[in-house]
Every structure is written in structure tokens, then in C-alpha cells.
Image (cartoon, rainbow, N blue to C red; front, side, top):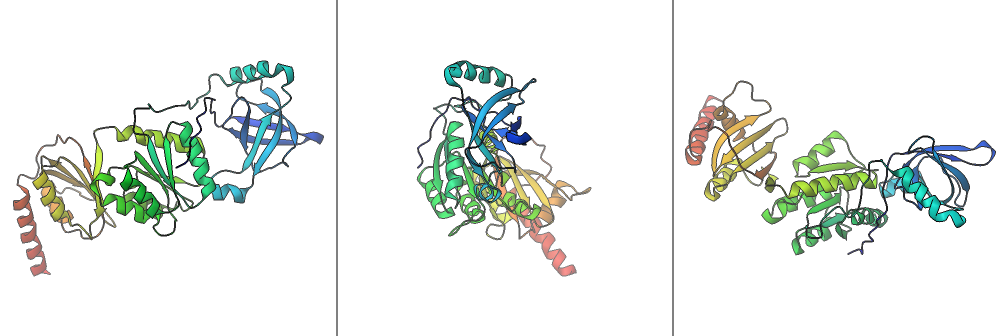
Length: 361
């Protein structure tokens, strides 16, 4: 487990920056993580480490002029491996005897911007997060950013390590890369969803492959959020904090999995026995449906492609789905009973309808 360093400085994003060098050199970019000591500038134009520049910080007009020096540069290839955007880190210099006054001027110039302050979580909250990725530098960067936001971080380099960490102590959130050895991110999602105590964990997937099919597959397997690489530290913190807040609400996922392993009929019987209330979301290759349960009784079914069909008609169709994914969210349901029959009667009626369909075929 990484030791997290806490910081009290402001974090300010997306501020226009100009770097003025010798012989009329001008580099323009956007800031990230401004503090009173320095900042990171997102730009594809990189200057050698040690280069001194005049920096114009356009938080307010007129811009604040500061002397700065390049202390590190992140090339595009290095940035991709870290899930970041290329750019340069600069430290403010030549403060001299006016250092305290200059820092106060920087603080005043930053006033009024949207900021992310630390700590953002109460020490009484469950704030443990498991982060899984093969890139150790990315793990360090993500751990530092989330630590500043008030989380306690445990890292893993593959899905098996992440799954073991979740079994040892259920975290508030899991953040996982998609491509990992031994057990990849998709396999980790499925493994978590098969255990009731782990299916409640919100999972954020991060990947360079952010195509529609890949994102759909992640969401079908239980992901709560998908963040394409590269991403900014502040974006990840905001998304993680939002999921942590949702985790405390009454609506929570208690089970998810694949229909090829657990049929909808089996789920209905299980919910009836346990007197469950909530929403069962089911996705097939071309359609999706939502089944509402109140005290174990199915009361309403609606689908994307339902047309003028009643809840019973839609239920008969959805009960025949054999491939796809499901996710059950525990919550209060206040729906009118549009089914009008218990689980056993409904399943017998579905069996009769299927027999008639096969005879006609």
C-alpha cells in the first residue's frame, strides 16, 4: 500500500498560460495543478529542462507575470504510458526577498477559480480505493492525486491482486485498467459481480481503447464509469468523488452477471424467495429491459423495443433471453402492479407460451 502525501495547496485546472523565452519564443498551453510553487503546462511544444522563461498566467486580466524554470518535461510517448497529456512542469523562481509577497500575489490571482480542496472526505468515511494497472508510474500518479482528495489507496498490477485486495477488505471504489496480465479488467468486473458483497463496489474502467463496443462491454459487465486515457488527475478525482457519494445512497447494486450463467427465471425465483425490492436491468445484444420488483413480486417490465406491448407481453419476450448481462439494484419501488400474478404463475405462463411458439415453428 502506498503512503499518501496530503497537500493543502489549491489545485486549479484549465487556465491559459503563455511562456515567453529568448528571441521572441512563445509557447502557449493550458495549466494543470497550479500551486504557489509552480504548475504543469499541457502543451506539445517542449523546452529543455533548465530553460528559464517568463510565464503569463491568464487567470484574470491583466495576466500575472512570473519568472519560472522548466524542471521536467513529459513527451507524448511518456504521457501515453502514464495516461496523461504531454507537457512541462515549471517552478516559479527569483522570488528572493519578495518571496512571501509574491506567493501572496499568486494566491490572490488564483482567487475565484473553481478549485478542488483537500481533504474532500471525512475521516469517518470508508475511503479505501483499489487501483489496478500494469504501469507503476501511472499507479503512483493516480495514488498521489486520489490521496490528496482524501482517499486511502491500495495498488495492484493485475486483476488477481485487485480481486484479492477486495476480498480482504471491501473498498469504496475499484479503478482498473482494461488490459492487464493474469486477469484483465473485464474478467475482474465479472468476478466482482458474482459475489454479492463485492457486486456493490462501483468500478471505474480506464483504457486507451475507448470505442463504442469496448465501452458498452464494460458497462454490460458492471462498470459504473469509463475514463479514456489520457486523462487529467482532477477529472479522475471528480469522477471518483461522485461515485463515492453515490455509494452512500440507498440505491445500490447487489448482484450482476451473465445470463448464460444465471437465467432470468432463476433470478425471479431467487428474488421472490428473498422478498427483494429493486430494479433488474437486463441487456441482450440488441435490446435492453428493466424489471421492477416490490417485495419479491415482479410488478412491471419495460424495454427499449417494447412498442405498444404490455408488461406481460414484454416479460414473456424477456424471459426467453439466454445471452446478455444483468444487474440488480436494490431500491424502493413504487410502481403499479401491471403483471397481476406471482412468480410461479408467471413462469408457468411463460413455459406455456414457449411451448405454443415451438409447436407453431
